[in-house]
Every structure is written in structure tokens, then in C-alpha cells.
Image 1 (spheres, rainbow, N blue to C red):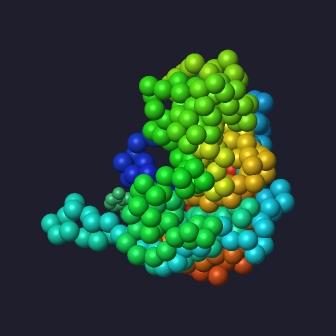
Image 2: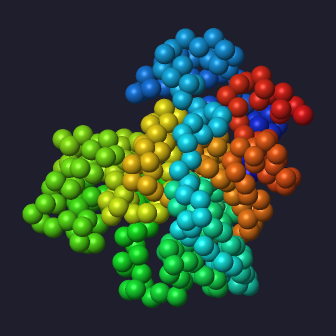
Amino acid sequence: MTIQAQILELIKQLQRSRDVAVIFISHDLGVVAGIADKIMVMCNGVAMESGTAEDIFYRTQSDYTRRLLDAIPQGAKKTDSRIQPDVRLIQASHICTWFNDYSGHKVRTVKAVDDISLDIQRGEILGLVGESGSGKSTLGRSLLQLVPTKTGTINFDGTDLASLSSRQLVPWRRRMQMIFQDPYASLNPRMTVYQTLAEPLLFHGIANRSNIDAHVQQLMDDVGLARAFIRKYPHEFSGGQRQRIAIGRAIATKPEFIIADEPVSALDVTIQAQILELIIDLVERHNLTMLFISHDLSVVRSIADRVMVMYHGAIIEQGATESLWRAPQQDYTKNLLGAIPIADPKSERSRAEL
Ligand SMILES: Nc1ncnc2c1ncn2[C@@H]1O[C@H](COP(=O)(O)OP(=O)(O)OP(=O)(O)O)[C@@H](O)[C@H]1O
Ligand SMILES: [Mg+2]
């Protein structure tokens, strides 16, 4: 059982055994379909509609709920792959990233990334899935050398990043960037949009004092932020807009490689769909290569050309997205795919009874 399924099961058990009422707050309609008896849909502080799970999903009244249901990612990737065959951008061999865990009596070694080798072609969107704690973020951070790797080589366009000092890495930082799940944590609350976007441009010498304004405005256009917002601070924006700022900062240096670590996990489905569209658009316009990390398999299916499945620090299975969906080889992958929540109360419940 996946971690998510275990936690949901635990909530259900406690609800029954202790006979308590639960208010379950979520933007995941599939999860809600499986767990809730009654549902209330909220938008801008207003209850748009409420009713039984069947009412909401099968006899939808409000346009807003309809839009939410329509925005759930479904099916295969809709845009063509832009992979340049035989042009490898990244080749990592035998990387290990281990941590010391001091929480117990004895120091324990956590093998967050344990002997992983992988290739990423130019233009490819590689999906990385796996449960919480499987090591996805650590693998991403290792590739960018944001965390020291214990062993292994990370060949980026012909240079082994793992052999470079942090000073030698600076020019490479411009070519590879990261987008995080929580733009609140990754954006400096004391910096305006202008400052946030200008900083990497000036630091890497892409713009100078005389043309910086034009560069920042261009970036805001690129990520769909109105220029009127330029002097605002992160807290004055919605989650989706904040993620646009973070994406703008990541693409400011015109990188070739971006790691998007759960970039839409904190967003509700309609905003999620907009940000995914923006990411796909930027990948095409700027010829990006991307490692897309997510525990939401439907999202990964809708965006990735190829998918790797991670479990306990290792890659246990990989393949072209649709082939993997059609014929997963490992039981673990089958379980992951089987556990994807479906926004349909009947199928969710019949699965729970199995
Ligand atoms: N800086 C650190 N120090 C010690 N242990 C760490 C550190 N970073 C990660 N770990 C451990 O490494 C393992 C993998 O963590 P990681 O964050 O890479 O997983 P993940 O797959 O990204 O999980 P999630 O889906 O929850 O984001 C976990 O056991 C975690 O506790
Ligand atoms: Mg993570």
C-alpha cells in the first residue's frame, strides 16, 4: 500500500473506531471522492455547492466544480516529444548520496541515493516518481550538486560536476536551475518581484543596470505575470502567481536544464493545469531539458516523455511513459499505478472494498 493510501486508511479506521466526524480539507478530488460522504466546494471564501459525494461528482451544479473536475490531468501527454536522440545532456554514473541520521541512540546512515546511474537527452522531460522519502528530491539536488555526493560522476554536457569546487560550479549554475514545490519557502519574502527576478540576471551578468528593467519585464511577460505587479512582494500573490515568480527566477539565466521538484503539488487543479501549461510552453520556447519530480502519477503522465520509478534510494524501473503505464514490470510500480486516486466515488469505493 502506498504511504498516501496508508494515511487515508488510518483516518478512516480512526473515524469508525472512535465514531468521530472528520472534516477533510483537500484539493485532491480523487482522494475526496474516496473518503468523503458529504462534500462542500469552496471558492474565494464562498461555498459554491455542497451535497453527497454522488451529487458533487455525478450531478454537478456549480460551474466552478465543473471546471475543477475538467482540470484533473487525464491520459497521455498531448504535446510531441522534443527529445534530440543521441544528444545526451546529462549522464550520471553510480551516484551515492548518504546522510547521517542522529535522531536515534546510534548514528544511522540514510542511503537517500544509492548507486544511481541515469542519462537525460537534450529536450527530454524525464519524470521521476516514487513515494515520500524514496529519495527523489535528494537525487535532483545531487544532480545539481546542491548536496554533496559521496561517490559517482555527473557528466553535464561533457564536464563532471562532482569534481568541481563550489566556486568552479558558479558558471554552471547559470545553465541548470531548480523549481521547488513551495514558492513561499523558496522566494525571499523581503524581495519584490522586481528584485527577485533582477538578482540572477545581474549576478550572472546577463543584464546590466541600464537594461535590467527591460529584462525583468520580458521575464514577467514570459511567465504570465502582469507588469503592474512588479513592485509587489510574494505574500501579496496567490499560490499560482507565486509559482510563476519562482519559475521566472529559474528561467532568468536561460538555463538548459531545469529540475522541477513537485512544482504543482501545492496548487489546486485549475491552477495546476495553468502552471503545467506554462511549463510545457517554456520547455518548447526555450528548448529546455527537464527532470520533473512528482508523486502525482497522473500529472507525470501528462507531461513526461519517459518515467523513472524510485524506491528506497534506487531506480527500480524506467521506460517511455505510455509503455510503462501499459505494462509496468515491477510490483511496486503496479501498486503505485493502481493507487492513483480517481475522481469518481463509485470506483474509489469499490476499490477500497477489495
Ligand atoms: N539533509 C538531510 N539530512 C539527513 N537526511 C536527509 C536529508 N535530506 C533528505 N534526507 C533523508 O533522505 C531520504 C530521502 O529524502 P527525500 O527528501 O529525497 O525524499 P523524497 O522522495 O523527495 O520525498 P518527498 O516525496 O516527501 O518529497 C529521507 O529518508 C530523508 O529523511
Ligand atoms: Mg521531495
